[in-house]
Length: 319
Image 1 (cartoon, rainbow, N blue to C red):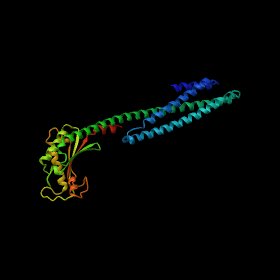
Image 2: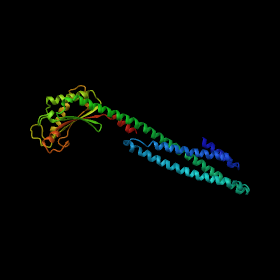
Image 3: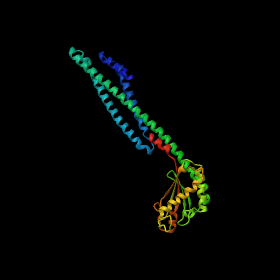
Image 4: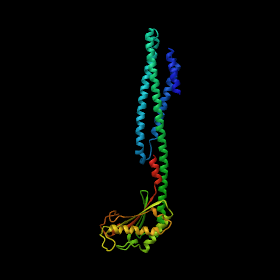
């Protein structure tokens, strides 16, 4: 609305054959204010480009669109400045043209009207580009807000996993030095139990001491129902030498994993939908199978605890 009023004043001034210095100064100040406002908006938009690395790719398209709009806006500003300069030149020579014939005067007035129409068109184009720029700014602000919420949720998940690791370490303290370790890495908690604690050679029957350790793990899982649990069975690279239902290390590692699942399932506080058993055979060793000691480390059960990330995934999809 302010731009339309300014243009109306400009038309009145030109057609009245006289442009006051105050009116010209007001127009120039308003134009400077528009430039200042655009520069401020540019600074604000650049400040919005800082976001978490995980969402950089998601925001890249918005940044590209922002750069495109900024380039187009600068082009419109350049055109506007050039047109405004032409108008000033015409205004300076207008007094001299008054002495010419009516035909020449009418011709120059027509040119002035054409220039004014161009100015109005470019003003509308600038307003449209400004509207698009404002929308992009709002989109970036909304993305930044969602990013902050996502970071808060991830921090909460990390804190919960740290607490879970501490709880497990405390519950399993009595099994220290018996081939049991508890670690936290990559946002997950790993409970690793060597087979010497759980199984006899070639067997998938869990011993008394090993069952105690698994039961303690189950108590912690029952108190944390929002945790996904993957139980992996691992062997060394020695070929299975037994007979009967087991044919190879794949079978053996799978049966050992399901044996652990069976013990955990006895705890009614555990949601069995959260449990998954997997046999990895000899193909995910911790160390090289080049000594009896290293082979003993590779023969193990790993219980991998992962927080459910459904809510975080949903928020990522909305960004």
